[in-house]
Length: 228
Ligand code: SF4
Image 1 (cartoon, protein in one colour):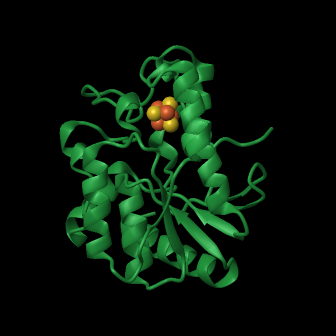
Image 2 (cartoon, rainbow, N blue to C red; image 1 turned 90 degrees about the vertical axis):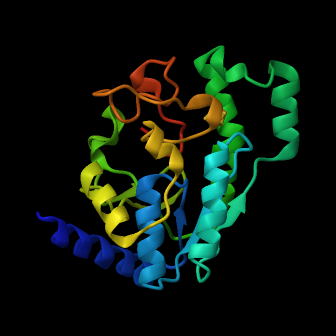
């Protein structure tokens, strides 16, 4: 499939989601792929609510982009969800501000408080959610398709960029002059929270800089994990 066909398929799928799966939302974490979807939703003027999870630990560059996106796409303001204050306070006071480095359990528990619980609130009452996942991104994403039922959250999940390559994502960003996270210019292809993201070396897997101290098989924050 050439790029023009992929772009058409992605656009058609987004239109179908908006018309057949309303209310639908798009989870934007401000990575390169998410900026492509944000651009398409705005360009096609689709009634898909864009939201983002502010974990409280995001890099400064992500906040800069958040502001830039608000100005660039005024027709589609992004709704921001924050973690529950009491849960963050309890975690930090009991385990420490950077306890996620100590064990996979404490890392997952931090992700649960700062990402999963706010995500569950964002998805409540929705028919479908859209993500910017691509198949090539990591060993945990090789069996993904365009559409799957998210049994954990009880709604349809769509991955319109599933077939896109990294090169195609960047070619489209440059061609359309889409705003992007400046950390990508510093060898950080996959951006999450500041303390859990670092640059990668040449030839390393694109998600190698996320939770780099953990085994590759455990490296998902739980946002995209299927219930078995
Ligand atoms: Fe916490 Fe790191 Fe997960 Fe962010 S990525 S929620 S800081 S463990």
